[in-house]
Image (cartoon, rainbow, N blue to C red):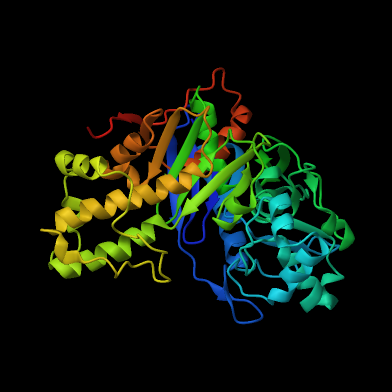
Length: 455
């Protein structure tokens, strides 16, 4: 007998996955595909969207035909800041451009000048001025300016998750999480699309609920199809479903993203300058967020320590948290030794004299202390008094020094590490779970572990 499942296509910049979740929200199948990139018409690297489309359709067809699984619904979790441009016949006109593609800065500047200046425009749209194509609304103006003969053929514009859904349903949709992903498209003051889109002759579909499912058919089999979701917002969904308390999620890795779904105050000019932004949650509410390039800063400075003390490259993984040493640092307050001055362009602090430390382990403790201070400063930008719970996920959830120091720096909060595998895919599955017709929705296991502070 085939197993009823939800299929989720989780499309990242590096890895593309399909995952199947059963009625108990257990992952019963996962297949990962690494795909070569191509270049766009300007020679800039981008995803091979034709290859992704073919893989997605053939993989889903194979699952349906083999009948080991009864695919009741499918949904999509993808990276943001990427648009698909469709013509009158519903055919895609362009590649899915790389959001790191450089473009003429005058396009950004003209937008700022027309709508109140950079600071005010960024405040209204809750989007830092990120340059390149990362503010994805800029892609519309860029195509309009650089390829006008192509732009006149554009009938519909879709965010990447909705484009993948469109491939199965033929329905043009929009939803809040993709619109709110530093796109310059949404006026957070008025909770509607920004006026510049209308002025540019661009009409986008009104956003609908992320729980909406549309009809599609594959090889004669009916499959309910979700409209997709931006991956950062999707990773929050399990916490909304599995937590009864107000929380912030500290999602760590190369970037440390601090997300507070309960801070509704408008972004200030200072917060925007310090790399804060607002996502929009699947519940159509702003998620005030800050970020720090913490994983990268850790790696390049740890490599410097490794070379100086002539230890193995993985020595930092063997360092055990020394409570006495951390208490010594804590007793001296929150002044940093590493990164005392402005961060350098290469993120390496060459100004600190490493000979003051007796060993690699001591220096690494100090590095982690100061890195955690930096992230606390970033988190403070979006923290609110009503939040009493901090969830830490990702790579630094395995670093005891970071976790327990966060408990020290936020004594008013309970600090937990959370192990939710494939959180963004699970979030996308949860949004369409009702299509399984299960009698009882299972609880979401956040894999929580409580941590105490040093001292």
